[in-house]
Length: 538
View (cartoon, rainbow, N blue to C red):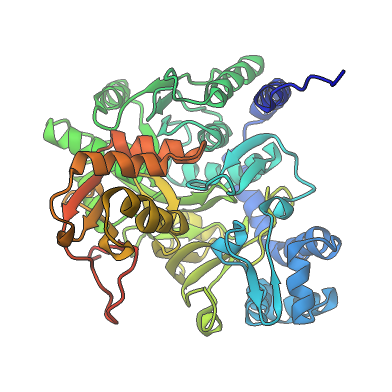
């Protein structure tokens, strides 16, 4: 008799239920150890003093002591050995060593990093399995999936020790903003990233009191994992004697309950501090302004999308104070806003957690751009080993003394003008361009006619900073049913399980998709790109 096998979905349910049960105790221990502002400042300064050692230790144990590491293939291709890297770091410093490695082809583009394109350097060609980039020495506590990835995307299992490592910078940021004891709240989509945000904020000693979810956790469309993760957080907090917030659904179009909470905090002499996407902050503050509700005294940390001058001014029109931040599912927090900014999204790069360079002229002949941001891991608890990895973003970068509290700690690298060139980021959700190509060249033409160049996506924002994603359809196709096309586009985005369904739902709820008839936008050389990102004037 053949053995009856259980469905894989049931096995997954059992495995993740066991993982969740173990996580409750770990979260409880984590929450019992709040971080004082002075400790955070001291730890960051110690890390900065030991950057070279941390960099070399990370490379030695995670790459050179692991012959099967994908990075070792690049090292061998370049003829680079351990002593070479050590000598480079001694002579040129961390960033100098990383720049030398880039010149020798030791880097990964976003598509190579996610296993979407083969790594090609001269005669060397191989594919990367994203699982092979996991840090083998980090605990696999909380699952997070990189935003906008498909089934082949990067599953990230984060170590709670990494949460604590990054929380040092979060506590330092809140202390610099005089917001350690503020009444904190998050307004995001559910999942591992929301848990990461709530837990790291909890290290300040004042956990978030509100968790506003942009999607209804009670909906049948929501995966059971999202509801389960909220229960795990609640139980872990109960064991630690710290109340954790219960997610409450607040749609993008009706943020009034959040505004009422803010006003209640202000009336009681408390400072409300909301963490959310940039476009979500725009919607909330525009709603408040239109309703003539003054948000003086409100603090908002905005991340997940480009923070343009238009968006910043729309938020400030309601008299709320807005701060930029940047991070990713793959490596956690990357930067927090400067208090003496020269640009709308002027941020201090967290160089105690990561190293950052730009390839410059070394990018010529590669899939990189000269101003690409290349990130490398410094902390031994990092979930993924990153060595000159591009996540698809470009930015302006400079080293300067600004005089603000974060700069005085030694965080002297500033980044601004951050834009994505390998993924679309709209409404706080990301989607890779390779997936868009399939939708524009195959899915839509097969259903509505036309050729690949008849469809183009344009990412922009309205006059007040609300994100818009326009699907431009060539006039030669004649009159087409806009509602059906919009529905088809969203269905294509949500064609796989996971983050894509959340992306489609957020774009639908936020009424972000606009269908227009028009001629495609061409580049200065006459090329028609699948995606055109409108860059508003700064």
